[in-house]
Length: 101
Image (tube, rainbow, N blue to C red):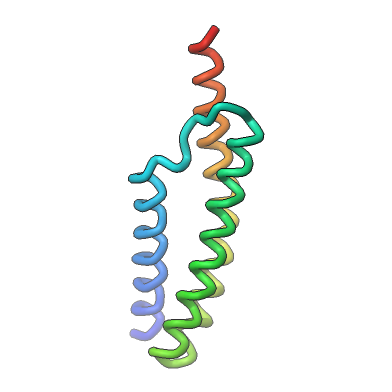
């Protein structure tokens, strides 16, 4: 039961973070490629910082098992987001570049 609850915490945290990024349209076409790369790096650094702080919070509130599972799963989600957000940003950049010509 603890593993199920720990996984639910991970899923809710990831879903909330991704929905905030998608709702604010942070990952969208920018004026230049460098600006697009900087935006993706800032979002990824924000993801890492917020997941670390959230792991500290649940480590303070819940038994030791929960932050370990969260931190372990957050690493894999970070790898996925490290590939997904640049892909999405560059796809928007290419589309914007092709429509300008």
